[in-house]
Length: 225
Ligand SMILES: NC(=O)c1ccc[n+]([C@@H]2O[C@H](COP(=O)([O-])OP(=O)(O)OC[C@H]3O[C@@H](n4cnc5c(N)ncnc54)[C@H](OP(=O)(O)O)[C@@H]3O)[C@@H](O)[C@H]2O)c1
Image 1 (tube, rainbow, N blue to C red):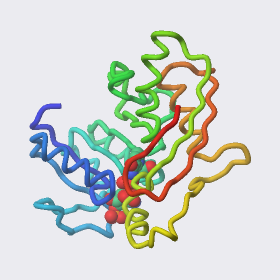
Image 2: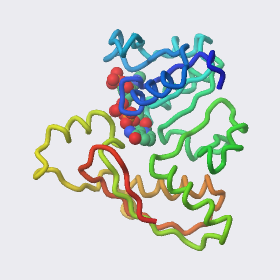
Image 3: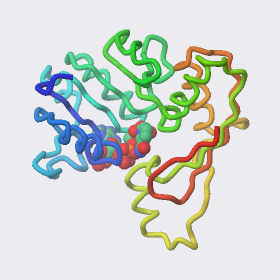
Image 4: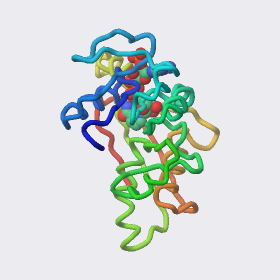
C-alpha cells in the first residue's frame, strides 16, 4: 500500500486498533485517521484526535482504505458506508468472513485471493491465521486427512475491556473459561475456526474437531494441532 494512502483505523481505541495505529506509524504511514464510537470522540491517541465513526464520515470519499476492528454488529452497520465512499474495507470481525464473494485472506496462505474483493476483504479469527499457516505446507506436502485442534486463548482476544478486568483480578481468582456462545454442539469460536479454515484452505469437507478454552493470560494464544 502506498505510504500516501488515506487510511481510516475504525476501532482505534480498542485492543486491535491500538496495535494497528502503532504499526502504521512504525511503517511510515502518515495519512491516518482514528475512528471509534461517540464514547471516544475527541479523545487524543498520540497526536491523532479520535473521530466518531458515523456513516457520513466513512462514506464522504476521503478514505482509500479502512481497517475495521469494531466488533461484528458495528462492522455490519459501518463497513458498507466506507465501501460506498470508495474505500477498501479490511474487516477483522466475523461479519463477512464466510460470506460468498468476500475473500478471507491470510497473506502467506492465500494472498492471491485478495484481488477478488468487491470492496470488502475479511480478516480471519486470530487462531485461524496461525492454524492455516501451519496446515497449508503440510497439505501441499502430504495432503490433510483430518485436523484435531485445541486452543488456549489469551484475554487479549476478548478485547481491551477484558484485559483490564484480568489486570485487576488476583491471580488465584483468575479462571479458565468457555468464553463463547454454545449452540448445543460447538462453541461459536469452534465453528468459526472450522468454517474459516475450510474456506481459506479451499477444503470444504475437511474434518476438523476443535476445543477452544480462554486462559487467564494477558497476551499470546497457544494451539495444539
Ligand atoms: N483482540 C484480538 O486479538 C482480535 C483478534 C482478531 C479479531 N478481533 C476482532 O476485532 C474486533 C475488535 O476487537 P478488539 O479486541 O479490538 O475489541 P475492543 O478492545 O473491545 O475495541 C473495540 C473498538 O471498537 C469501537 N467500537 C465499538 N462499537 C462501535 C461502534 N458502534 N462504532 C464505532 N466504533 C465502535 C470501540 O470504540 P470505543 O472506545 O469508542 O468504545 C473500540 O475502539 C472484534 O470483532 C474482534 O472479534 C480481535
